[in-house]
Length: 427
Image 1 (cartoon, rainbow, N blue to C red):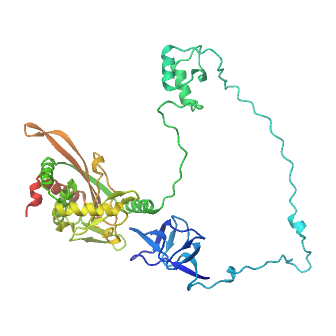
Image 2 (image 1 turned 60 degrees about the vertical axis):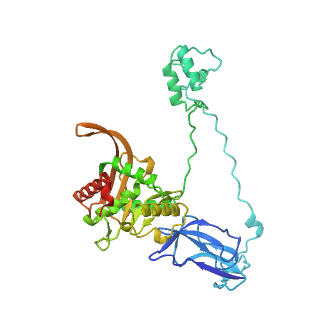
């Protein structure tokens, strides 16, 4: 049979290596042509590798989590068809002889080679070490003296008082506390309490490793600062409810499409927000179009699909695109071009919200915007007090490119549109 070496192909511009995130075959298994061999992850996407031939898998390049350079061998397959690997002498079995290395040296007999080494006599078993004198054994047959309150508490905790050592003539609450603190339970387990689980080492691979690498690089390279402002979204929420009530067959609107419209409308006044910073070249590129990254939580980790030309879309189009891209990311069907090329990112924890966040910038972008949870609170409106829906908005910026005054001014421009939502639809 011939051998075919399948080399990792070029799977993206500028990609030098890819990570093995899953094998679909094992050594010794038969694989058919076009069957899936492995899943390989680049910086932004997972790519399926398919077998170019049918045959038996005889070599695999590494384990899950290993990085494989582009062009190196990923798998070797024995095939009945044409191979691309010449058999090496190492592939042919060779009978080996035991020969004396020095002329005149005596041959060593098989018996001498196979003779076991002398076994040392077992060491004497050490005598048992007596328990320290300071440790007092608990006599479980003794009468237990304790107040009714202590007995009731012990019963609630599931503690056998005969196991508790008293400091004085009777068991007190302090003795019970000491037992709970220092005994480790000795088999004791309080009702409703959680048992300790075994430690679980988990190899950081795939999307989790990419997230770790990207976030660490972002924090190392970018001097972050975060600005947070409170916004009154009462009027916007009323408008959203009216639009949803009359949406017909169009998608339901969340807060996000309105925020994106506001972001895009204010970018022309603050172009430094919609930019990328080239560390190596020392160049800041300010983009005319807004290609908005949308941080999306998936089972594999955080992914950032990109809404292309967000400035050209209305709230209904944005809602449709948000739904489509989020579903593609969660099901692993997002294309490479849908996960790259962002110029600004929005991240939201949705209903989990939070009072404020300090999001990490999606490098090489220079800003990331994070809406927080909407809460209802009373606010002063002149001399009146009214119920209002309030939301904090966070923005983290790269201080090499964006000054604090610029970030604050940009958010104030957003605040004006959000709090007067009719302006979102004005020319």
